[in-house]
Length: 244
Image 1 (spheres, rainbow, N blue to C red):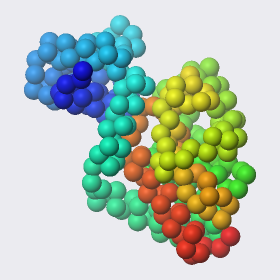
Image 2 (image 1 turned 60 degrees about the horizontal axis):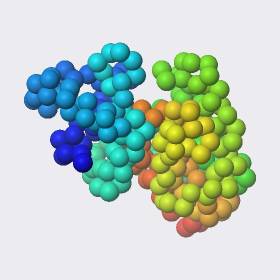
Image 3 (image 1 turned 180 degrees about the vertical axis):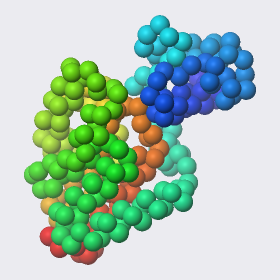
Image 4 (image 1 turned 45 degrees about the vertical axis):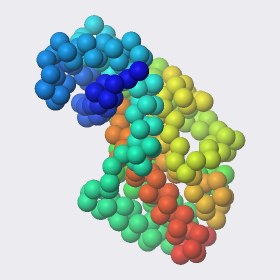
């Protein structure tokens, strides 16, 4: 059974790793939690035994596992995206609304929304427009340190090749869907997370917009941005504020 402190330590590891892109050590966390490094090493070892953290090599640092990310993401959903929107969040959503609203046509608006997500999340952005998959920001994805290995890149490429037919067939039915690492039904070993929002459009009641990025990312912020973008698109498109 995970304690409250262990849950906070797991969240701290995930957030520090998202920022630093290097395994998180006990000394850093001990300072954050005002405990001794020995106490922190013990707590991290317990989290590793439970399968939430792993040690990628012989260094003292640890990184989250897919199981750890899943617990963290579930906690974000349970707390309604983890936090109240900040002023920065509100500026981001206002910028997305303005950019999408100036699209004129539905397809251009969806593309503009994807491009906004690319800029704001630094991930690969994607959306379904009819029977086509629009992708933007592939360079963002492959510039991440996780994807320096050639085989890793090929695994991600295979996922992208099969993403559009999979979305059409699987039709994820939640307003916001998060598939972490090995949870992805395609490209299980690609080390990426797919965050997509379902929305209604003139093209389909099951249209999708979202991002694809490394499992190491700021989930609370990215999930909020993807969710808000889906809502903005559906509102504009279903209220006939944009042309088909």
